[in-house]
Length: 101
Image (cartoon, rainbow, N blue to C red; front, top):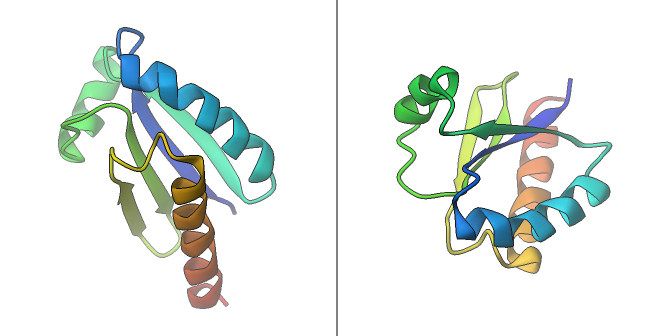
């Protein structure tokens, strides 16, 4: 019943490596609110989904609520800034709690 954070990454991606410290903090803060799904873009089983979402930069970070089909892409410029991405994740939770009541 949780919304989730979907992260496309690659082992060779330096931005993904820098994002990993932000991701660790997010996982702690939002452990009761979000499930975290990490998908390696190099895996053939993840390529179709990555293509359908138009992944053009890594990490590709999305907030998703499958109950109401709400999907938000977090811009690459935000992913390394913990405060800015936290602001967006808080906003997503607020909006989705409002619409799922």
